[in-house]
Structure formats: C-alpha cells, structure tokens
Length: 427
Ligand code: IMP
Image 1 (cartoon, helix red, strand yellow):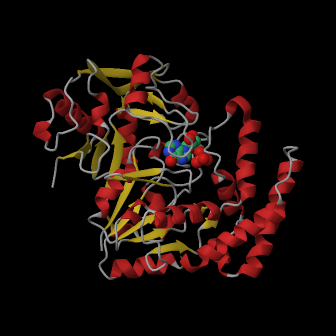
Image 2 (cartoon, rainbow, N blue to C red; image 1 turned 30 degrees about the vertical axis):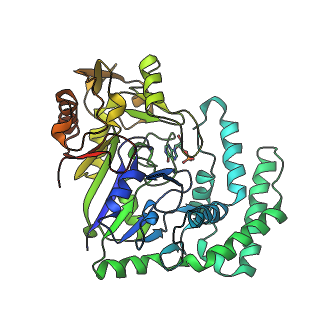
Image 3 (tube, rainbow, N blue to C red; image 1 turned 135 degrees about the vertical axis):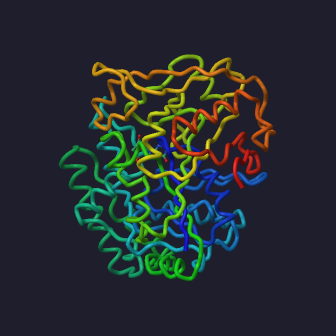
C-alpha cells in the first residue's frame, strides 16, 4: 500500500512536524527513518505544545502506530525522557503502538562527549553540530563498532557492551583530545536503567512495516533535518551524518521504492540555517533580524538563533529534483507579511558566470552570489486565510512563482502556528 515521504527542502526546521501532524490524519503508521534527537519537531494542538526529538510526531494521534526505524541513532536516556513527557501529557506510549528497531544504533554519553570534543578541536572550522552525539554514533555504525538497540533486550550483555563503548570513547577523549574521561560506572548504570525501560519497545520493525504495508496500512515516513543537510547530497562537511533525502526512507526503514507514491517537500517561505556552512541568501541586515523575530527562529533542540535569509529557489529546485517531490508545502508565509518587497534567488553568479544549477561541490557553492528577483510584498495580516483566494494578490503571486521556479505544485501554505492556520490549494 502507499507510502508518503515527508522531506525538508532546505536546511531543516522547515516546519515538518506540523505538516506530519496534518498528514497523520491520512495515515495508519508513521516512521522516522534517519537522524536522532538532533531533530526537533514541534506540534501545537490547542493549548498543548509537544516538542518531539525522537518519537514520530504522529504519536499525538490516538491509534496511529509509531516506528523509530533502523536508520536512526537513539540516545536511550533522551528517549525515556521523551516517553515520560508524552505520558505526562496523556499520550498513549504503550509498546503496542510505539516500536523501536532492533537495528537502530544507540548514542552513548561517550558519543556526546566526542561530538563536543571534535567540534572544539575544529575551532573556527567547526560544523556547528547540535552536540547530540550524532556524528560519532554514525561513525561507530560505519566502523561496525556500534551498539544496537536490540542489545537492550539482554541487560547482562548490554551492561558489558555499554562499558566497553564508554571505554573506547574514553581512549579517544584522553588519548586524542587530552580531555577528562567520562564516568563509566555511573553512565553505564544510567544506560542500563534506560534499556530496561525501552526493551519492550524493541522489535523487528522491517518485517512489521512490510506486513503492515501488505495489510493495506498507509505509511508516512517522517524525514528529519533537510535535503541540504544530507550526508551525500548536502554541502559536505556542513551536513548531518545521515540520509535526510528520499533514499534514506528506503534504506532507513527497509521498504521498497514502489511503495512510495507521494513525496511531500516542505519549505519555508524564506530560508533559515543553524550551524555553519554556506548560505548564499543569508541576510545580515534589519530584514534578517525581522525574519528571526517574526518567525521565532531559534532552534528547538539547541535554542540557537537561526541564520535567516531570502528564499533560495535554486536550492529548492535542487531539492525537488533530488527527492522527486510530488508536491510542496510552503510554511510561515505570514512571517513575510508587512515587507514592501520580497526577494527570491533565481540563479547564482560566480567567477564562472551565471548558473541556475546548484553547485554541489562545497568550495564552489561557497563562492556563489545570489541573483535576485524582486516581487511586491503585502501588508495584510494573512493569518485568517483558509482558501487561496483569501490571500492578497501579491502573496498568491509569490506562491505561484515558487511553483514555477521550484518546478513543483504547492499543495498547502501555512499562515500561522496553529494546526488549522493553513491554506489548502488542493483537496
Ligand atoms: P549534527 O546533526 O548534530 O551532527 O549537526 C550537523 C549540522 O546539521 C549542523 O549544522 C546542525 O545545526 C544541523 N542540524 C542537525 N539537525 C538539525 C535539525 O533538525 N534542524 C536544523 N539543523 C539541524
């Protein structure tokens, strides 16, 4: 049966949690396929706000099954905290509806320490990671020295494996970085306690998912981060360590390409980036400040102020092509209200001339200058708009131009943070 993949079209923080919540109404199962608690997905339902980092955002929908897939890296301490937070808000967190892949890799406190140490050692060339241990955990995975979630089912061997993992991390922390080692005994104990809580959730999610698909259930694959942070398709090394693009849904969940019938891209009406790395349309002026303030552009996971800039249609088109977006959701259009004019980068200029194609090699991308098209802005408050015709003509023109430049139809536009504050362009 059909699977939908939801993917960030920019550098993450596009508002995917909110759209996942909307798509959840048409789904039976929701699965995260990559990344870990570097992600921060916010879902607002009435008075209640849920900040989710690991559990798929569909968990707030009673009856929907949630899967944390094999491609993820899981910090067991954080997952326990998140489950407790959900339970305290009255959400059903039973292992009958939340499933953790036995093949997902675990993030240990050693990975957290190594992430921080590596970032400090990079100095001015730091990536600006979330310091959640993501890179070091995926390093262990690729080196085949990682710790699998499935190990949590056997407390005896798990304790020994965690201690060994922490000791390996300590050897690098002290040997390579000259730093204090982490406390193996107390941290192994904490991980063991978390494992005891999580063991009932661990299962073979590959077979489970394939069986659910065969039984006709509708799957929503919830992407984390964004296309431009993909390990292979973003601008290395200013990327995360996982596959944030559509291919990651296949490898991270173990499903076949023919299951995927719909690929929904999500882009903000402007661009933001946290962490370091090239961002051609970044604004360093009052407009950038205004976008940050109006859009509340501070990281869900780290609280860092996000870098803000104009919409980059070259990057958007690249994301649409790499992922095969079948539709695009544009979020936070209301943040642009009140600007006299709005700009969209339609091409790049560099020493090699003008191009409308995304330079994929980072040093080339670092040198581009955006070529802007200027469109008239709109003064109206659009937060009450629900139909396309409710939007002012200039806001409609902006959306139509995004469709043309991105090469993908826009299906939904969000105009405020509440669940219902959205304009649907198609049914
Ligand atoms: P890491 O994933 O913590 O290793 O960080 C690598 C890069 O990805 C940094 O620039 C982070 O700021 C960025 N990043 C990771 N996760 C997210 C996210 O969920 N939203 C936005 N940026 C992210």
